[in-house]
Length: 97
Length: 393
Image 1: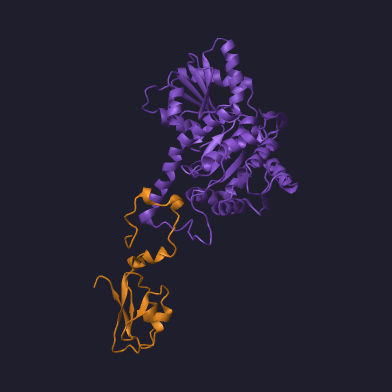
Image 2: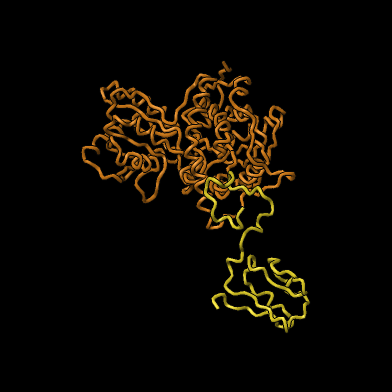
Protein backbone atom coordinates (compact mmCIF):
# COMPACT_ATOMS: atom_id res chain seq x y z
CA UNK A 1 0.00 0.00 0.00
CA UNK A 2 1.18 3.47 -0.81
CA UNK A 3 2.21 5.69 2.07
CA UNK A 4 -0.69 8.08 1.41
CA UNK A 5 -4.13 7.20 0.10
CA UNK A 6 -4.47 10.10 -2.29
CA UNK A 7 -4.61 7.85 -5.33
CA UNK A 8 -7.56 5.64 -4.32
CA UNK A 9 -10.48 5.62 -6.77
CA UNK A 10 -14.07 5.60 -5.50
CA UNK A 11 -14.38 1.93 -6.41
CA UNK A 12 -11.41 1.07 -4.19
CA UNK A 13 -12.96 2.47 -1.04
CA UNK A 14 -14.50 -0.01 1.36
CA UNK A 15 -18.28 0.05 1.74
CA UNK A 16 -19.31 3.07 3.80
CA UNK A 17 -15.69 4.29 3.60
CA UNK A 18 -15.02 1.84 6.43
CA UNK A 19 -11.40 1.62 7.52
CA UNK A 20 -10.53 -2.06 7.86
CA UNK A 21 -6.83 -1.80 8.68
CA UNK A 22 -6.55 -0.79 12.34
CA UNK A 23 -3.97 1.85 13.12
CA UNK A 24 -3.60 3.01 9.53
CA UNK A 25 -3.74 6.63 10.64
CA UNK A 26 0.06 6.37 10.77
CA UNK A 27 -0.11 6.35 6.95
CA UNK A 28 -1.60 9.81 7.03
CA UNK A 29 0.96 12.48 6.19
CA UNK A 30 0.10 15.14 8.75
CA UNK A 31 3.42 16.76 7.79
CA UNK A 32 1.54 18.23 4.80
CA UNK A 33 0.09 20.86 7.14
CA UNK A 34 3.49 22.29 8.08
CA UNK A 35 4.52 25.82 7.18
CA UNK A 36 7.42 26.07 9.66
CA UNK A 37 9.75 23.30 10.82
CA UNK A 38 11.91 22.75 13.90
CA UNK A 39 15.70 22.91 13.47
CA UNK A 40 17.81 21.70 16.42
CA UNK A 41 21.08 23.36 17.36
CA UNK A 42 23.04 20.39 18.73
CA UNK A 43 25.47 22.71 20.52
CA UNK A 44 22.67 23.96 22.76
CA UNK A 45 20.78 20.63 23.08
CA UNK A 46 21.23 18.92 26.47
CA UNK A 47 19.39 15.74 25.35
CA UNK A 48 16.74 16.23 28.05
CA UNK A 49 13.89 14.90 25.86
CA UNK A 50 11.43 17.65 26.82
CA UNK A 51 10.55 18.13 23.14
CA UNK A 52 9.92 14.37 22.81
CA UNK A 53 7.52 14.49 25.77
CA UNK A 54 5.63 17.57 24.64
CA UNK A 55 5.24 16.78 20.93
CA UNK A 56 1.44 16.36 20.52
CA UNK A 57 1.90 14.13 17.46
CA UNK A 58 4.61 11.85 18.86
CA UNK A 59 6.59 12.93 15.81
CA UNK A 60 9.86 13.34 17.72
CA UNK A 61 12.14 10.36 18.19
CA UNK A 62 15.49 9.81 19.85
CA UNK A 63 18.45 9.26 17.56
CA UNK A 64 21.24 6.74 18.24
CA UNK A 65 23.56 9.45 19.58
CA UNK A 66 20.93 10.63 22.08
CA UNK A 67 19.68 13.73 20.28
CA UNK A 68 16.03 14.29 19.35
CA UNK A 69 14.67 14.85 15.85
CA UNK A 70 11.24 15.37 14.36
CA UNK A 71 9.89 13.02 11.68
CA UNK A 72 8.91 15.39 8.89
CA UNK A 73 6.25 12.92 7.65
CA UNK A 74 4.23 13.73 10.76
CA UNK A 75 5.55 17.04 12.13
CA UNK A 76 2.84 19.69 11.69
CA UNK A 77 5.19 22.51 12.63
CA UNK A 78 3.19 23.53 15.68
CA UNK A 79 6.31 24.84 17.45
CA UNK A 80 5.50 23.42 20.87
CA UNK A 81 8.92 21.73 21.00
CA UNK A 82 10.66 25.07 20.39
CA UNK A 83 8.46 26.76 22.99
CA UNK A 84 9.21 24.13 25.65
CA UNK A 85 12.95 23.59 24.99
CA UNK A 86 14.71 24.72 28.22
CA UNK A 87 17.88 25.77 26.36
CA UNK A 88 16.20 27.37 23.28
CA UNK A 89 18.00 24.80 21.14
CA UNK A 90 15.09 24.52 18.68
CA UNK A 91 14.35 27.22 16.14
CA UNK A 92 11.25 27.22 13.92
CA UNK A 93 12.25 27.95 10.32
CA UNK A 94 9.95 28.94 7.45
CA UNK A 95 9.50 26.03 5.03
CA UNK A 96 10.23 28.22 2.01
CA UNK A 97 13.70 29.08 3.24
CA UNK B 1 -52.53 -16.92 1.38
CA UNK B 2 -52.15 -14.83 4.48
CA UNK B 3 -54.91 -13.75 6.78
CA UNK B 4 -56.80 -10.61 5.71
CA UNK B 5 -57.93 -8.52 8.64
CA UNK B 6 -59.22 -5.02 9.30
CA UNK B 7 -56.65 -3.11 11.33
CA UNK B 8 -55.36 0.40 11.78
CA UNK B 9 -52.54 0.92 9.29
CA UNK B 10 -50.11 1.90 12.07
CA UNK B 11 -50.77 -1.36 13.89
CA UNK B 12 -50.44 -3.46 10.78
CA UNK B 13 -47.18 -1.63 9.99
CA UNK B 14 -45.93 -2.60 13.45
CA UNK B 15 -47.01 -6.19 12.81
CA UNK B 16 -44.98 -6.14 9.60
CA UNK B 17 -41.96 -4.91 11.55
CA UNK B 18 -42.52 -7.84 13.89
CA UNK B 19 -42.65 -10.24 10.95
CA UNK B 20 -39.34 -8.75 9.75
CA UNK B 21 -37.98 -9.95 13.11
CA UNK B 22 -36.08 -6.75 13.86
CA UNK B 23 -33.48 -6.77 16.63
CA UNK B 24 -33.86 -3.22 17.86
CA UNK B 25 -36.48 -0.51 17.87
CA UNK B 26 -35.24 2.88 19.02
CA UNK B 27 -37.82 5.61 18.75
CA UNK B 28 -39.28 8.66 20.38
CA UNK B 29 -43.03 9.30 20.22
CA UNK B 30 -44.34 11.98 17.89
CA UNK B 31 -47.74 12.40 16.30
CA UNK B 32 -48.80 10.84 13.91
CA UNK B 33 -46.14 8.12 14.18
CA UNK B 34 -47.07 7.22 17.77
CA UNK B 35 -49.31 4.19 17.25
CA UNK B 36 -46.65 2.32 15.30
CA UNK B 37 -44.09 2.61 18.07
CA UNK B 38 -46.62 2.07 20.85
CA UNK B 39 -47.75 -1.17 19.27
CA UNK B 40 -44.15 -2.31 18.82
CA UNK B 41 -43.48 -1.65 22.50
CA UNK B 42 -46.48 -3.86 23.31
CA UNK B 43 -45.25 -6.61 21.03
CA UNK B 44 -41.83 -6.54 22.69
CA UNK B 45 -43.30 -6.31 26.18
CA UNK B 46 -45.64 -9.27 25.76
CA UNK B 47 -42.91 -11.41 24.26
CA UNK B 48 -44.26 -11.61 20.72
CA UNK B 49 -41.18 -9.88 19.34
CA UNK B 50 -37.71 -10.71 20.63
CA UNK B 51 -36.09 -7.30 20.21
CA UNK B 52 -34.57 -4.50 22.23
CA UNK B 53 -37.05 -1.67 22.60
CA UNK B 54 -35.09 1.45 23.47
CA UNK B 55 -37.24 4.43 24.51
CA UNK B 56 -34.63 7.06 23.72
CA UNK B 57 -34.68 10.65 24.93
CA UNK B 58 -34.88 12.24 21.47
CA UNK B 59 -34.99 11.46 17.78
CA UNK B 60 -31.32 12.34 17.51
CA UNK B 61 -30.70 9.47 19.90
CA UNK B 62 -33.18 7.24 18.05
CA UNK B 63 -31.13 7.47 14.88
CA UNK B 64 -27.83 7.31 16.76
CA UNK B 65 -28.89 4.10 18.52
CA UNK B 66 -30.10 2.69 15.21
CA UNK B 67 -26.71 3.50 13.71
CA UNK B 68 -24.94 1.72 16.56
CA UNK B 69 -27.02 -1.45 16.45
CA UNK B 70 -26.87 -1.61 12.67
CA UNK B 71 -23.10 -1.23 12.82
CA UNK B 72 -22.83 -4.34 15.01
CA UNK B 73 -24.96 -6.29 12.54
CA UNK B 74 -28.41 -6.05 14.10
CA UNK B 75 -31.61 -5.27 12.21
CA UNK B 76 -32.71 -1.78 13.21
CA UNK B 77 -36.08 -0.07 12.93
CA UNK B 78 -37.12 3.45 13.78
CA UNK B 79 -40.01 5.68 13.01
CA UNK B 80 -40.71 9.39 13.18
CA UNK B 81 -42.49 12.42 11.73
CA UNK B 82 -41.76 16.03 10.84
CA UNK B 83 -39.99 17.80 13.72
CA UNK B 84 -38.64 14.47 14.93
CA UNK B 85 -37.04 13.96 11.54
CA UNK B 86 -35.49 17.41 11.79
CA UNK B 87 -34.01 16.59 15.15
CA UNK B 88 -32.41 13.39 13.83
CA UNK B 89 -31.34 15.07 10.60
CA UNK B 90 -27.61 15.02 11.37
CA UNK B 91 -27.49 11.25 11.82
CA UNK B 92 -29.89 10.59 8.93
CA UNK B 93 -27.20 11.82 6.56
CA UNK B 94 -24.40 10.01 8.37
CA UNK B 95 -25.98 6.53 8.34
CA UNK B 96 -26.43 6.79 4.58
CA UNK B 97 -22.74 7.55 4.14
CA UNK B 98 -21.92 4.67 6.50
CA UNK B 99 -24.16 2.42 4.38
CA UNK B 100 -26.15 1.15 7.36
CA UNK B 101 -29.38 -0.54 6.20
CA UNK B 102 -31.72 0.98 8.78
CA UNK B 103 -35.42 1.05 7.89
CA UNK B 104 -37.51 4.01 8.98
CA UNK B 105 -41.21 4.62 8.55
CA UNK B 106 -41.84 8.31 8.16
CA UNK B 107 -45.44 9.15 9.06
CA UNK B 108 -45.50 12.26 6.91
CA UNK B 109 -46.44 15.45 8.70
CA UNK B 110 -45.95 19.14 7.93
CA UNK B 111 -42.84 20.91 9.00
CA UNK B 112 -43.87 23.64 11.44
CA UNK B 113 -44.60 26.52 11.42
CA UNK B 114 -47.25 27.41 11.81
CA UNK B 115 -47.30 24.51 14.21
CA UNK B 116 -49.07 21.58 12.61
CA UNK B 117 -49.47 17.92 13.40
CA UNK B 118 -51.25 17.12 10.14
CA UNK B 119 -50.16 15.50 6.93
CA UNK B 120 -48.17 16.71 3.99
CA UNK B 121 -44.79 15.88 2.48
CA UNK B 122 -42.74 18.85 3.62
CA UNK B 123 -40.90 16.68 6.15
CA UNK B 124 -39.49 14.13 3.74
CA UNK B 125 -38.77 16.76 1.11
CA UNK B 126 -36.60 18.59 3.64
CA UNK B 127 -34.26 15.57 3.64
CA UNK B 128 -34.74 14.60 0.02
CA UNK B 129 -30.98 14.71 -0.51
CA UNK B 130 -30.00 12.59 2.50
CA UNK B 131 -28.90 9.55 0.49
CA UNK B 132 -31.60 7.12 1.66
CA UNK B 133 -33.78 5.03 -0.62
CA UNK B 134 -37.23 6.61 -0.36
CA UNK B 135 -40.58 5.08 -1.27
CA UNK B 136 -44.18 6.23 -0.90
CA UNK B 137 -47.23 4.12 -0.10
CA UNK B 138 -50.77 4.39 -1.41
CA UNK B 139 -52.51 2.27 1.21
CA UNK B 140 -52.10 0.08 4.27
CA UNK B 141 -51.36 -3.09 2.35
CA UNK B 142 -48.51 -1.35 0.59
CA UNK B 143 -47.12 -0.18 3.92
CA UNK B 144 -47.18 -3.74 5.25
CA UNK B 145 -45.60 -5.24 2.14
CA UNK B 146 -43.02 -2.49 1.86
CA UNK B 147 -41.67 -3.06 5.37
CA UNK B 148 -40.53 -6.55 4.34
CA UNK B 149 -39.44 -5.22 0.95
CA UNK B 150 -37.48 -2.50 2.72
CA UNK B 151 -35.25 -4.86 4.70
CA UNK B 152 -34.81 -7.11 1.69
CA UNK B 153 -33.52 -4.21 -0.42
CA UNK B 154 -31.66 -2.21 2.22
CA UNK B 155 -29.70 -5.22 3.47
CA UNK B 156 -28.85 -6.56 0.03
CA UNK B 157 -25.06 -6.53 -0.17
CA UNK B 158 -25.37 -4.86 -3.57
CA UNK B 159 -27.25 -2.00 -1.89
CA UNK B 160 -26.49 -1.59 1.83
CA UNK B 161 -28.38 1.68 2.22
CA UNK B 162 -31.02 2.89 4.65
CA UNK B 163 -34.60 3.13 3.44
CA UNK B 164 -37.52 5.43 4.27
CA UNK B 165 -41.10 4.27 3.81
CA UNK B 166 -43.26 7.38 3.56
CA UNK B 167 -46.81 6.97 4.76
CA UNK B 168 -49.26 9.85 4.94
CA UNK B 169 -49.90 10.84 8.54
CA UNK B 170 -53.49 10.28 9.72
CA UNK B 171 -54.72 9.70 6.15
CA UNK B 172 -52.97 6.34 6.28
CA UNK B 173 -51.59 5.94 9.80
CA UNK B 174 -54.90 6.34 11.61
CA UNK B 175 -57.37 4.63 9.28
CA UNK B 176 -58.54 1.05 9.50
CA UNK B 177 -57.96 -0.86 6.30
CA UNK B 178 -58.16 -4.49 5.28
CA UNK B 179 -54.58 -5.80 5.24
CA UNK B 180 -53.48 -9.25 4.23
CA UNK B 181 -50.78 -10.50 6.59
CA UNK B 182 -47.99 -12.69 5.29
CA UNK B 183 -47.52 -16.29 6.35
CA UNK B 184 -44.31 -16.92 8.29
CA UNK B 185 -43.16 -19.21 5.50
CA UNK B 186 -43.57 -16.40 2.98
CA UNK B 187 -41.42 -14.08 5.08
CA UNK B 188 -38.78 -16.78 5.41
CA UNK B 189 -38.83 -17.32 1.65
CA UNK B 190 -38.62 -13.61 0.85
CA UNK B 191 -36.42 -12.02 3.51
CA UNK B 192 -33.02 -13.58 4.27
CA UNK B 193 -31.15 -12.93 7.50
CA UNK B 194 -29.10 -9.72 7.66
CA UNK B 195 -25.52 -10.44 6.62
CA UNK B 196 -23.57 -7.20 6.97
CA UNK B 197 -20.35 -6.61 5.06
CA UNK B 198 -18.49 -5.16 8.07
CA UNK B 199 -19.49 -5.10 11.72
CA UNK B 200 -18.06 -3.49 14.81
CA UNK B 201 -16.48 -6.37 16.70
CA UNK B 202 -13.51 -6.41 19.11
CA UNK B 203 -11.94 -9.35 17.27
CA UNK B 204 -12.13 -7.61 13.89
CA UNK B 205 -11.49 -3.93 14.56
CA UNK B 206 -12.70 -1.47 11.91
CA UNK B 207 -13.42 2.24 11.88
CA UNK B 208 -16.83 3.34 10.65
CA UNK B 209 -17.75 6.96 10.11
CA UNK B 210 -14.16 8.18 9.95
CA UNK B 211 -12.89 11.51 8.74
CA UNK B 212 -12.90 12.07 4.98
CA UNK B 213 -10.18 14.54 4.07
CA UNK B 214 -10.69 16.62 0.90
CA UNK B 215 -8.56 14.22 -1.13
CA UNK B 216 -10.98 11.33 -0.50
CA UNK B 217 -14.33 12.97 0.33
CA UNK B 218 -15.56 13.24 -3.27
CA UNK B 219 -14.62 9.63 -3.94
CA UNK B 220 -16.52 8.59 -0.79
CA UNK B 221 -19.60 10.50 -1.97
CA UNK B 222 -19.54 8.86 -5.41
CA UNK B 223 -19.09 5.51 -3.67
CA UNK B 224 -22.31 6.36 -1.79
CA UNK B 225 -24.37 7.74 -4.69
CA UNK B 226 -23.50 5.06 -7.25
CA UNK B 227 -25.01 2.20 -5.23
CA UNK B 228 -28.11 4.35 -4.61
CA UNK B 229 -28.52 4.89 -8.36
CA UNK B 230 -27.77 1.23 -9.05
CA UNK B 231 -30.17 0.08 -6.30
CA UNK B 232 -33.09 0.59 -8.68
CA UNK B 233 -32.38 -2.78 -10.30
CA UNK B 234 -32.43 -4.50 -6.91
CA UNK B 235 -35.61 -2.61 -5.97
CA UNK B 236 -37.39 -3.75 -9.14
CA UNK B 237 -36.26 -7.34 -8.52
CA UNK B 238 -37.35 -7.25 -4.88
CA UNK B 239 -40.83 -5.96 -5.82
CA UNK B 240 -41.13 -8.56 -8.56
CA UNK B 241 -40.20 -11.36 -6.17
CA UNK B 242 -42.54 -9.94 -3.54
CA UNK B 243 -45.29 -10.37 -6.13
CA UNK B 244 -44.18 -13.93 -6.80
CA UNK B 245 -44.50 -14.69 -3.07
CA UNK B 246 -47.69 -12.86 -2.07
CA UNK B 247 -49.32 -12.06 -5.41
CA UNK B 248 -49.11 -8.27 -5.24
CA UNK B 249 -46.80 -6.72 -7.80
CA UNK B 250 -45.35 -3.25 -7.25
CA UNK B 251 -43.38 -1.04 -9.61
CA UNK B 252 -41.36 2.16 -9.20
CA UNK B 253 -44.00 4.01 -11.24
CA UNK B 254 -47.58 2.80 -11.23
CA UNK B 255 -50.09 3.71 -13.93
CA UNK B 256 -53.88 3.71 -14.12
CA UNK B 257 -56.20 4.00 -17.15
CA UNK B 258 -53.47 5.05 -19.51
CA UNK B 259 -55.28 3.99 -22.70
CA UNK B 260 -54.95 6.96 -25.10
CA UNK B 261 -54.83 9.35 -22.14
CA UNK B 262 -53.97 12.86 -23.30
CA UNK B 263 -53.67 14.19 -19.76
CA UNK B 264 -52.04 12.44 -16.83
CA UNK B 265 -52.26 13.23 -13.16
CA UNK B 266 -48.99 12.57 -11.32
CA UNK B 267 -49.18 11.83 -7.60
CA UNK B 268 -47.19 10.54 -4.64
CA UNK B 269 -48.57 8.71 -1.63
CA UNK B 270 -52.21 8.36 -0.66
CA UNK B 271 -53.41 10.94 -3.21
CA UNK B 272 -53.08 8.15 -5.77
CA UNK B 273 -56.18 6.28 -4.64
CA UNK B 274 -58.30 9.44 -4.55
CA UNK B 275 -57.14 10.53 -7.98
CA UNK B 276 -57.86 7.07 -9.41
CA UNK B 277 -61.52 7.69 -8.56
CA UNK B 278 -61.29 11.14 -10.13
CA UNK B 279 -59.89 9.58 -13.30
CA UNK B 280 -62.84 7.15 -13.39
CA UNK B 281 -65.28 10.03 -12.98
CA UNK B 282 -63.60 12.20 -15.61
CA UNK B 283 -63.44 9.28 -18.04
CA UNK B 284 -67.19 8.84 -17.57
CA UNK B 285 -67.56 12.50 -18.52
CA UNK B 286 -65.61 11.82 -21.70
CA UNK B 287 -62.26 13.30 -20.67
CA UNK B 288 -59.08 11.62 -21.87
CA UNK B 289 -57.24 11.28 -18.58
CA UNK B 290 -55.07 8.80 -16.73
CA UNK B 291 -52.87 8.59 -13.64
CA UNK B 292 -49.20 8.05 -12.90
CA UNK B 293 -48.27 7.30 -9.29
CA UNK B 294 -44.66 7.73 -8.25
CA UNK B 295 -43.86 5.06 -5.67
CA UNK B 296 -40.06 5.21 -5.80
CA UNK B 297 -38.81 8.69 -5.00
CA UNK B 298 -35.07 8.06 -4.54
CA UNK B 299 -33.43 6.82 -6.65
CA UNK B 300 -35.75 8.69 -9.00
CA UNK B 301 -37.08 6.30 -11.68
CA UNK B 302 -36.27 8.48 -14.70
CA UNK B 303 -36.65 5.74 -17.35
CA UNK B 304 -39.90 4.41 -15.95
CA UNK B 305 -41.31 7.89 -15.65
CA UNK B 306 -40.37 8.88 -19.19
CA UNK B 307 -41.90 5.69 -20.50
CA UNK B 308 -45.14 6.19 -18.55
CA UNK B 309 -45.54 9.72 -19.89
CA UNK B 310 -44.25 9.08 -23.42
CA UNK B 311 -47.67 9.52 -25.07
CA UNK B 312 -49.09 12.24 -22.84
CA UNK B 313 -49.82 15.78 -24.02
CA UNK B 314 -50.39 17.25 -20.57
CA UNK B 315 -49.25 16.44 -17.06
CA UNK B 316 -50.93 17.64 -13.88
CA UNK B 317 -48.35 17.18 -11.15
CA UNK B 318 -49.76 17.21 -7.63
CA UNK B 319 -47.31 18.24 -4.94
CA UNK B 320 -47.89 18.06 -1.22
CA UNK B 321 -44.81 20.12 -0.41
CA UNK B 322 -43.31 23.48 -1.23
CA UNK B 323 -39.91 24.39 -2.58
CA UNK B 324 -39.97 27.97 -1.31
CA UNK B 325 -38.93 30.39 -4.00
CA UNK B 326 -38.44 27.53 -6.40
CA UNK B 327 -40.09 26.10 -9.46
CA UNK B 328 -43.21 24.66 -7.80
CA UNK B 329 -43.27 21.48 -5.73
CA UNK B 330 -40.33 19.07 -5.46
CA UNK B 331 -42.04 16.38 -7.54
CA UNK B 332 -42.80 18.80 -10.38
CA UNK B 333 -39.23 20.09 -10.32
CA UNK B 334 -37.84 16.58 -10.78
CA UNK B 335 -40.34 15.76 -13.48
CA UNK B 336 -39.55 18.90 -15.44
CA UNK B 337 -35.88 17.95 -15.27
CA UNK B 338 -36.62 14.36 -16.28
CA UNK B 339 -38.54 15.43 -19.39
CA UNK B 340 -36.34 18.33 -20.44
CA UNK B 341 -34.93 17.55 -23.88
CA UNK B 342 -36.94 14.31 -23.87
CA UNK B 343 -38.60 12.98 -27.00
CA UNK B 344 -42.01 13.81 -25.58
CA UNK B 345 -42.37 17.18 -23.90
CA UNK B 346 -45.85 17.46 -22.48
CA UNK B 347 -47.29 20.63 -20.96
CA UNK B 348 -46.57 20.44 -17.26
CA UNK B 349 -48.89 22.08 -14.78
CA UNK B 350 -48.21 21.88 -11.07
CA UNK B 351 -50.60 22.25 -8.16
CA UNK B 352 -49.58 22.38 -4.53
CA UNK B 353 -52.41 21.22 -2.29
CA UNK B 354 -53.30 19.19 0.76
CA UNK B 355 -50.87 21.04 3.01
CA UNK B 356 -51.18 20.28 6.72
CA UNK B 357 -53.88 17.70 6.11
CA UNK B 358 -56.31 19.98 4.29
CA UNK B 359 -58.72 17.64 2.53
CA UNK B 360 -58.43 17.39 -1.22
CA UNK B 361 -61.64 15.77 -2.39
CA UNK B 362 -62.68 14.25 -5.70
CA UNK B 363 -64.37 17.54 -6.59
CA UNK B 364 -61.18 19.43 -5.80
CA UNK B 365 -59.23 17.22 -8.18
CA UNK B 366 -61.89 17.77 -10.85
CA UNK B 367 -61.46 21.52 -10.36
CA UNK B 368 -57.71 21.07 -10.61
CA UNK B 369 -58.17 19.16 -13.87
CA UNK B 370 -60.32 21.89 -15.43
CA UNK B 371 -58.02 24.62 -14.15
CA UNK B 372 -55.07 22.77 -15.66
CA UNK B 373 -56.80 22.64 -19.03
CA UNK B 374 -57.37 26.42 -18.87
CA UNK B 375 -53.77 27.05 -17.85
CA UNK B 376 -52.41 24.97 -20.71
CA UNK B 377 -54.38 27.15 -23.17
CA UNK B 378 -52.70 30.17 -21.55
CA UNK B 379 -49.32 28.56 -22.40
CA UNK B 380 -47.73 28.91 -18.97
CA UNK B 381 -44.07 29.45 -18.24
CA UNK B 382 -42.07 26.42 -17.14
CA UNK B 383 -41.87 27.56 -13.57
CA UNK B 384 -45.60 28.26 -13.36
CA UNK B 385 -47.40 26.54 -10.51
CA UNK B 386 -50.46 27.15 -8.40
CA UNK B 387 -51.40 26.80 -4.76
CA UNK B 388 -54.81 25.15 -5.06
CA UNK B 389 -57.70 26.36 -2.93
CA UNK B 390 -55.85 29.15 -1.15
CA UNK B 391 -58.18 32.00 -0.24
CA UNK B 392 -57.18 35.29 -1.81
CA UNK B 393 -54.98 33.68 -4.51
